[in-house]
Each structure stands twice: as structure tokens, then as C-alpha cells.
Amino acid sequence: MDWLNALNTHWAPVLWILLAGVSLLIWYFALRGKHRLEIRNAAIEVHRRRLQTGEISKEEFNRLKQSLSTN
Image (tube, rainbow, N blue to C red):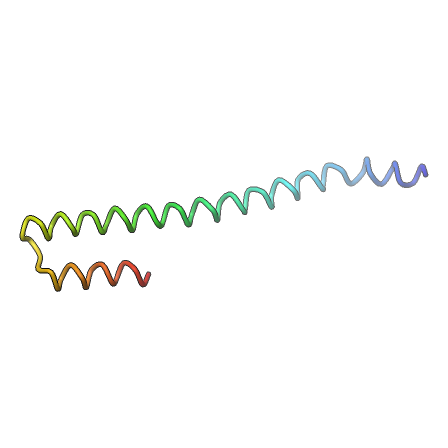
């Protein structure tokens, strides 16, 4: 069983680094999706305000909203 103990002590730092790397990747992709959603919602709100002030037409608003939804 000495070989098992030696293996565990030798590979433990590598396994912790791999676990941390995987956790960081999951965290990054989760936040990236949330960030994209927040940006899209903010852009739609800006266009909605432009529609309310009369800067753009209803058709233009729908086109801009559709282009944000497909990306």
C-alpha cells in the first residue's frame, strides 16, 4: 500500500489544479451567458426608449429587437 500512498501524494497537486481549472471554465461559461443576456436586455431597453421618444418606428424597433434575439 506504500505505492498507493506515494501515488496519492504525488498526483494530488495535479488533480487539485485540474479540478480548479474545470471549475473556472464552468464559472466562466456561466457568467458569459449571463453577461450576454444582460447586454441584450439593455440594448432592447435602449431601443424601446428610442421608440417611445419617436426616434425610430415600430417596424425599426421590431427589426432591431429581432436582430438582437438571433445573435
